[in-house]
Amino acid sequence: MQKPFVLLGIAAALALFAVIIFTTDAVQGILFIVGLALGLTLLYARFGFTSAFRRLMAVGNAQGIQAHMVMLAVASTLFAIILSTGFSFTGVTPAGYVSPVGISVIFGAFIFGIGMQLGSGCASGTLYSVGGGSSSMILTLIGFIAGSVIGAYHFTFWMEETWALEPFSLAESTNLGFFGAWVVQMALFAAIYYGLKFIAAKRNAPAMKPLPTTTGFKKIFRGAWPLFAAAIILALLNALTLTLRGNPWGITSAFALWGSKFLELFGVDVASWGYWQGNAEQLQNSILADSTSVMNFGIIIGAFIAAAATGAFKPKKIKPGIAAGSIIGGLLMGYGARLAFGCNIGAYFGGIASFSLHGWVWAVMAMLGTGLALFIRPIFGLKNPKPKDTLC
Image (cartoon, rainbow, N blue to C red; front, side, top):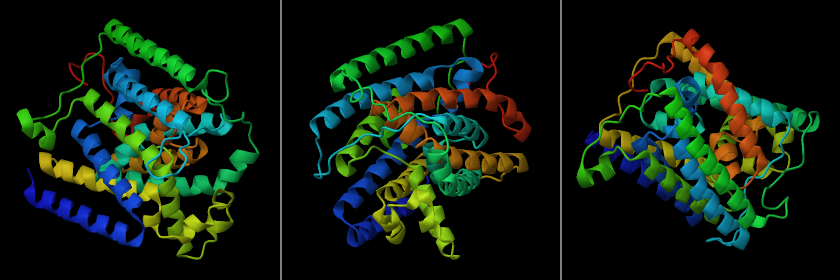
């Protein structure tokens, strides 16, 4: 355990929590704590979206995607209850992420799938890896922010000049209702889970490499957490987020905000962009007033504490190829997330849990983007799992 770093992380968390409480309100402070819990969970379990997609496409390893199905099943169950009853801890009417399916989602998710493989991390992976001490992920984050800003600048074109269907909810756009939609999604999750089990056996997929861990009670504070336990915790935290702020967990809208505020310092009139029309107040307010931003800060600090607790906070030098892949990957993810109404969290996790068709489309297109990226990764010195590997 890197005790000085652990103490530094705890001190930073307490200080930022105090600032958030005194400058905004208690709900923002609670959301920051939720972010801390997300960061701890993601790093202790090394819960991946990028690696899960890559392992499945490269060698047929399904462990990561099966954990996703458990996470989505738990989240869908909780979301169905919350959205159908209007339950909220703060009085804000909860609403899921239901967005239209169109060219922007199809293209945006596809390039996001490519980008997360080149950048070696998705939206959540970027944040917890930055907190965990990955040097290259800082470049991915910078690219992510830049791509998000460019996507926000082009947002009006994609929304007004390209084809799209109306937003479609399996629960509310049909006669199924939330219970019927829940039954359908549970059947889909089960079919995917056991179908992937068959595929993995057929391809004789290598198992995931086990994480360094300890035993007994210490595992709670030192890791590694079981993948399926983390899946359930992430689902619970996403549902808690929905009941606190009225929307599911999201990440990348904050990147567009951070980058846009940065451009404003140099006189760029970002408020005139279509993306920010109707959201001018968000640009004028402090970043700490943005719930997605405070949760992102919580994820980074939480992951830092977890990495220090496991003795894993060890930044390394970045190879040129990895650096180039990180920046390009970040740009593709940032741009793709704006077009696709979210990332692996907002669109895939939050969208599917909200019974939105666009979440399922996002998953398919990001998986296809991952398949293409497997041929591109070696150009940047990035390795892919191989069928003859013992572990992946």
